[in-house]
Length: 107
Image (tube, one colour):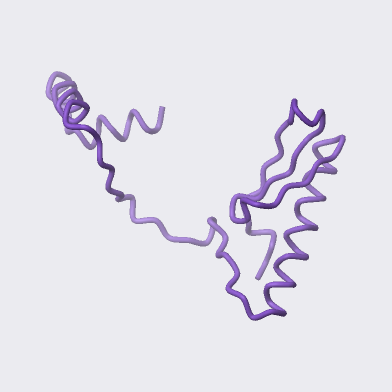
């Protein structure tokens, strides 16, 4: 498993007064540090250690999001009034509801 393929993010934590490094595939892990660079290095090190421990224990390791294939389709349930409003808006714009919702999600 290549830990470089995981999705990392560094953000500021006002509560902690430090930068926090995160990994989307391991949502329970984080690393606090005074600089963004140290936060990223810290979370990468923690992920590496956790992956090694999981491999040693024979546990399944999460696939990196970057390596997953996405079809572009997913189902969303909304209240009927929201569905009606979206359908009306799409009709008024002379576009499909799929195109309208896709544009709204991308915004």
